[in-house]
Image (cartoon, rainbow, N blue to C red; front, side, top):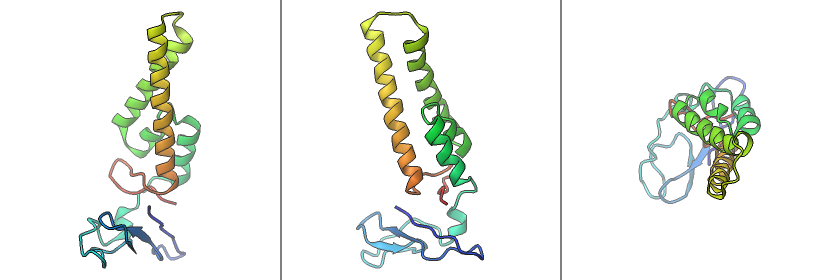
Length: 142
């Protein structure tokens, strides 16, 4: 989990994270964990790690059009967006367009729907807590 606070002058103050190795709360800009001394694999500049994508737009797109995958196209993860769009079109076609009573096909539609739904909840959670990255692997934060 990451907490980034933006001040008036554009500098980040009070930013913190957790060590991936021992779980210790550390400064976001820390290069090594003070407890376990392992590398945090982070750049020392917070501005280099913050995405230029608007946090509010990304969260709104995920909340409203999450199962379609529009938020992935916005944040620059195009293959992920195509995967979401394919899942959506698959279950939507099975449920609303095809006039089938085939039990296997209906189960497949339910399976696609469940995958799409829980995937959207997972990405929405990652956006809310500030752990989702954009296509350039930068954090999308507010």
